[in-house]
Image 1 (tube, rainbow, N blue to C red):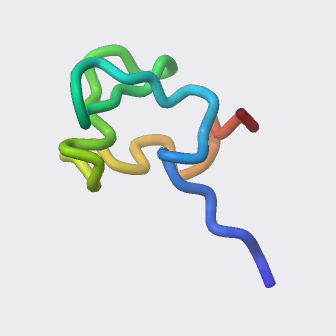
Image 2 (image 1 turned 30 degrees about the vertical axis):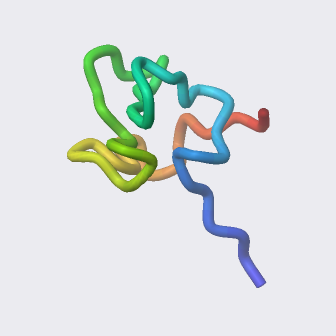
Length: 52
């Protein structure tokens, strides 16, 4: 079974404030909002995914 790569499991996912996260590969993005999918969730479609 193929593993689904998600922002919350990526090494590029960085906290910006409580519950909100950005992607270091896409400055200004909000991939997680209040610990859930944000407006830019999966912005890279897994292409920039790195292991934590």
